[in-house]
Amino acid sequence: MNPNTAWLRKTVALVILIGVWEACADLGYFDPLYMPAPSKVAVALFQLFAQGTIWPHLIATFSAALGGLVVGLVVGTVLGAVAALTPLVGELLAPVMISLNAVPRVVLAPLFVIWFGIGVGSKVALAFILVAVLIFFTVFTGIRDVDRRLVERVITLGGGRGALLREVYGPSVIAWILGNLKVAVGFAFTGAVVGEFVAATKGLGYLLSFAQSSYNAALMLALVVLIMGFVLLLFGLTGLLERRLLRWRG
Amino acid sequence: MLRVDSLALAYGATPVLEGASLEVPSGKFVSLVGPSGSGKSSLLRAVIGLQQPLAGVIETDIGAGDIGMLFQDDALLPWRTAEQNVALGLKLKGVAAGTAIASARQWITRLGLYGLSERFPRELSGGQRKRVALAQVLAREPQLILMDEPFASLDAIVRARVTQDLVRLVELRGISVLLVTHDLEEALALSDVVYLLSHGPRARISGRYEVNLPRPRDVIKARSHPDFAPLLQRLWNDLSREVGERAA
Ligand SMILES: Nc1ncnc2c1ncn2[C@@H]1O[C@H](COP(=O)(O)OP(=O)(O)O)[C@@H](O)[C@H]1O
Ligand SMILES: [Mg+2]
Image 1 (spheres, each protein chain N blue to C red):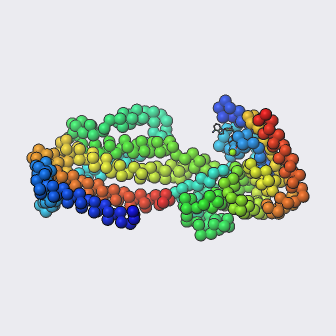
Image 2 (image 1 turned 30 degrees about the vertical axis):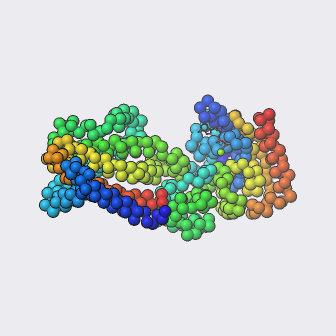
Image 3 (image 1 turned 45 degrees about the vertical axis):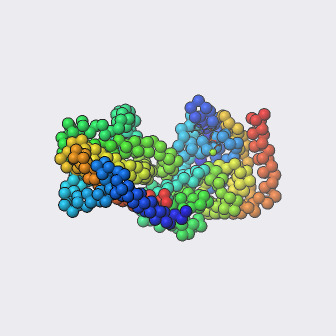
């Protein structure tokens, strides 16, 4: 198959899927209460924007996700680097991180609500913990597995600790983080939305839980589509960043 | 001048070298040959300070910054272009960034890589990467170069060209070289002195061969010099005995 027309085939497949769904709904095969037609979902989505009610929710979720993402990236990177480079800190942090990694970290959501309230704090915290643990391990194992030959080359050329960090560890770590950035973006949104779902006064997660309590399946699906759209958009931006910064990889 | 005297080296409880002694006089091209696994790489690593010897003396009047090392593999920094890789060697020696880049470009051109300065290592062939690594070492204008089977992965033609370029430069600038190779012909064609390392464990130097072929030297034509074949025969016999004795 021609790879140049891949997007075309994908679009056609999606259109067919939506078409079949619409037809089934219109012909009454699906109960509209549980599985509304795509046109109803589209209307719900349109109304969210037309009435302008969506904006404060979108802003809330985005701020929480991006806040948690940024702080998680920074803290995860610093902790991972320090743990890998100083054995004592590594031994102290490893058990905590391994435990945190062993549980699905969204289970911390109710606890964070108690600790940080139902405001934005508990959502940022959840997004943060999801991202930070991921990035910690990315950086920690990345530094441990750094190409020894490159380290030896730089030492042989007279490079000290600073040169090693700048020339070898820094670029390696950036490559590993970028490799996991899409997962991190996904995690950040999961954290924000799940946090809002548990307890909140605004946000896409809050709207989801509102739609659930009012049995509004069209709204729920509209929100799912919306979240998907935004995460895909961010994936696209991440991809651009990757291609730009990892040009050497081709 | 580099003098290695009674060097002993081990990995944990496994002995590698014991009582290995050799000398690289100033401006001379010296090769080290020997069975694989005998400890040739380990010896070079000890000289450059990447390996701690158990006993023995490593003595040189050359500063650490004036010793260059060309490793067996051509691992360059993958995220740096050819010229950045070469310039890094200069910057770490204290050369200002602008001067380093200009000089790096000159060396890249001198080694036949004109137009490839801004390529990443991934975009270069094995032979081209080897030349970049060589440029990185030569640009620092070292007084002593250690080389660990640097040309093993190159095909015959490229290999002859790279070694000829190297020999010309070394002769011109009076650089001292300690080359590890498993190619006896190459060792003789390039060197003033060839050392034979015995079979490990506890390898030591078991032979020293003076190569009095004229300089400047053509690395291909040198092989048809009348003195070449007898020397090669001797070296071959001695190395076979080293390998044979242990194998028997
Ligand atoms: N990092 C290492 N750890 C343990 N043993 C090693 C290591 N490097 C080399 N050796 C062993 O030391 C011996 C000498 O190795 P090396 O110096 O690489 O030999 P050569 O370069 O002559 O082939 C070999 O037996 C090899 O297996
Ligand atoms: Mg070796």
